Image 1 (cartoon, rainbow, N blue to C red):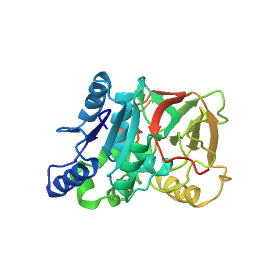
Image 2: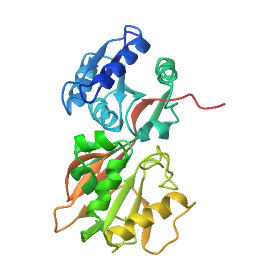
Image 3: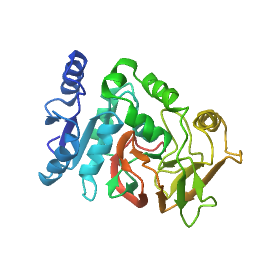
Image 4: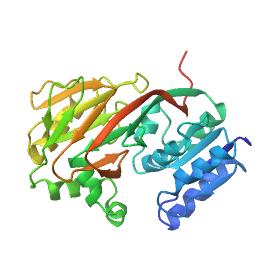
Length: 290
């Protein structure tokens, strides 16, 4: 597959990272591989691969790596492939990839079944699955890499508990479709899933040209955490403290310094403007069941 390149983010240069690299190399059978050496490098490597004429550019890593490679291939004819190797691989789940079978994921990449999905933008930066303004971005901001490695997915819960006692920010929401103008925490979904295999955005479709937006109104953080669980485990959202709507554009502002996260990575502060390009990203995905 001379038209395919793999961009591997091996995380920390430890023994496990070395094993991941060996495993990937054994699966891809001599296909060129570019290994990142520092944070944020995957985007530049993907952009260079586009310039070199590669048609399939594969992100081997977690959601953060996928986000960077997607930013590198955006606005090109190259297709994004996924070898899911992170702690959480929400976008891979959304696409229906077999998460625990890298060999099968590689077969899907070689099969070259193309799916066009929406490509959201926040303040000029692309993302594939999720944006968050407020609580979860604050958690990402305060969860160090070393802490993440020690506690894995638990680290976010521990960080959330630490900030739960604080007063949440006041966020102002502007959108033609919003029936609410103010909230404490906003989640913006391109697909259905959030944080794992949880269908949080109940009506989301990854190629409909719309964001699904969940606004937690004037709630304290502890209440928000409780309602997050309610939303995850219910079939629809009926509580008055939460607003759910779909839109093509959204602007969120605040008088405070409120962080923004995109696909689980910190991406600056408010104000933030969300827009969406319909079916603008080519992704290598499982063939539809006939």
